[in-house]
Length: 560
Image 1 (cartoon, one colour):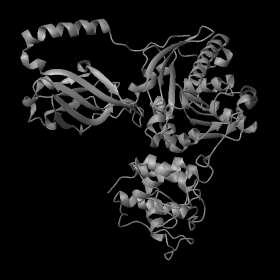
Image 2 (image 1 turned 90 degrees about the horizontal axis):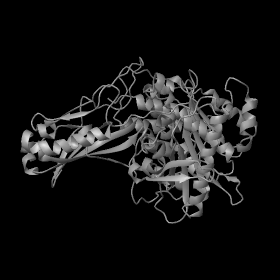
Image 3 (image 1 turned 180 degrees about the horizontal axis):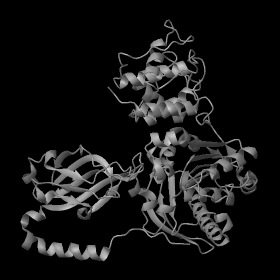
Image 4 (image 1 turned 180 degrees about the vertical axis):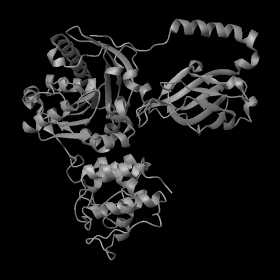
């Protein structure tokens, strides 16, 4: 196997430079240069990877900067982290507005910026410059410390299994004293190595669970090397993968024995090479996991150019494990037929809790995932609140059997969605503020996973109960009801139809219909359309795939 070479800094060179600067600054550069004592970058993990949102600049003499303004700074090399345009050309367009806001407290200048890829892109790294105060100019080399939200809560460890396989891992522990769920995260091939960090920051796979509000521990092993394609025909590499999983299984059992992990709520997720590894981990320990999310899986199961029978043979023991398989149809890196055949095999074997989401080109393009970035199907996957909620409601019984619990919030793309599900998705997609210390405003009960979302959409005026006191969370949503929700969203964005907008004539939603204006607005905005030329399909239920398309169109809608 070829070792994945990670880009690392020449630490010896940096140390020598730092020491030399500390000696020559006072004599040759002048006292002004030592105004800056320390610079801290505050980052988080976004869809494109590590993003910086602010800097803390500690200075010796804060009085000197009392008249400091945002206009005193300019940032170059700052962009949103999406490196390809529609023509699949490498781009790195700097922000026109850097979004700089400044506050000064004690000796620290806090600089909030429009979040950008840290430390830069494929063309250039970032640089902050100030002509007014040149000593406040800096770049990545000047940054003393990087603090990363959630990532800094992981603890580094080393574990050697009974078979001699040694694993480097990062563990984020649940703050709860009682046993809690465990998410086992398997990173992609681009994050192999020994740096102990890239598998946490390359995408949201390690942090999305706790940042979505789930009280869970997260175990993230970093594998030293990537494996080849067609590992099912490579006995040496397959044996190495199995050896790693033996050690990882023993590490998990250690956490269970120590009382940190609920053995009935251990989950698995992986992307790309980690997605392929997830299939293999499941088949090696079919009774270990309560559920899994597998994204853009590499071809570890069987030959995707062959028949489904080979997949059935390999996957027959995991037919009872709830799995959500996700992939871009035209992924240029890992062929989606691996996912499609795995899904077909499991359904033909009788699996009752397997779902699949296959993103077409139009959807990926709407997400600005062009060309090679169509491999990034984990971006929409981890943005899908329904999929995450479905997983964390899964548990095993004491006998080890799968128990879906309250699984009404998980649904297949062709199945109708409920009011609770829509509330959950809207709250996530529209980034609605959570209401702290909220009181549930309806008299009927709602599942715990949906209560906060229902409060948020109600508070935002996007959804109301079917009456003043009843929300009816388990009721399906008709197309005409969805049009009303869309109309509320349009109103919240101050959208107005163009003066020359064409009025649609639907026989089932005429001018006297209670939702006539909402239907007309949803159609004029291009968010919804009729089921036929003269039928809106008012009484038909909205499916998960239709909801996803509606949300895509809302994302693309410009505001007036």
